[in-house]
Amino acid sequence: MSVVAHDLWRPSSGCDDDCLPTAGEVPTVPVARRVLRLVAAVVMLVAGVGVALLLPVLPAPERQALLRGWARGTVRAFGVRLVIKGRLPRRRALLVANHVSWLDILAVLAVAPTRMVAKREIRSWPVVGLLAAAAGTVFVDRSRPRALPATVRRLADALRAGRSVAVFPEGTTWCAGDGAAECRPGGGFRPAMFQAAIDAGAPVVPLRLGYRCADTGVGTTVAAFLGADTLLRSVARVVAARQLVVSVTIAAALHPGQDAERRLLARAAESAVHLVATAPARTRLRPVPTATQAVPAPTPDPGQELDLAA
Image (cartoon, rainbow, N blue to C red; front, top):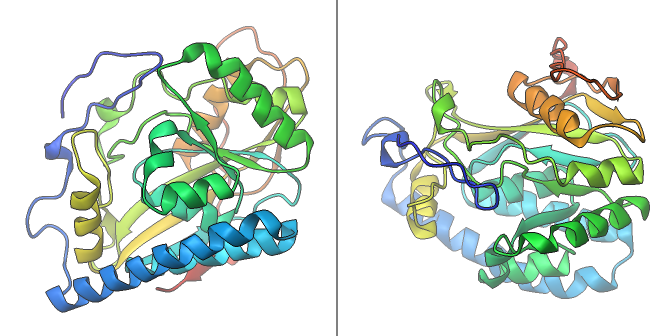
């Protein structure tokens, strides 16, 4: 772990190779199984081209079903099991999540096939960039902070039109390992995108993404996509891992008032994500002149867990 200077526009984590699992720490599958997973993943990515062509011409319900099905199938192809805890609200919402891996995008789309906010570089990724563009992803150029207000307006317009939007407000990936609080990006959740929810009168739904190894029963950083990492190296770790599980925990919805303060809203959402609140209760946010109040973590309801086996 290393200490990284805080940059408002280009956030970075304090992660390095020490944050990744050591050899033998995570159970692995035979080489033949890894090859089969890679082949299956390539097939799903190729199928994604067809999905990208169909999305713009399909009605909204069919578009969401197709995108959700493709994302779930791709997660399974990589040998990862998806577990969903909690329920999303039926109406449009701003979904905010912590950011660990490139797999996060697939996990969120598998739960809620929404418009995503992503860094501009993803637009050039093979197949994934094409699919992201077809799904209406809002690409952010972090080298142009002056474009941020226009991006917020686009998100607010999407929310007013009844579409949900998903954001990773930490602005970068980090290991999210146990006891690795110093690796969290400086500044926490960036508040700018939360203004879109306030302007549109939309709820904010925090999502907690976590990775664990079912064989050991503990969390793992095997899927983490760190700053110095390469995509191929990260993919190789994922397809080699045995019984890797990604969980998406849906926290209590936050309902900001029209005069809510976006910084306090961001802090409340961040607290909810890291406290892993799970009950879909309604929480009304109003301006608070002092420090942010943490959102309490309700008792999880076992009946709201959906396990999608790989």
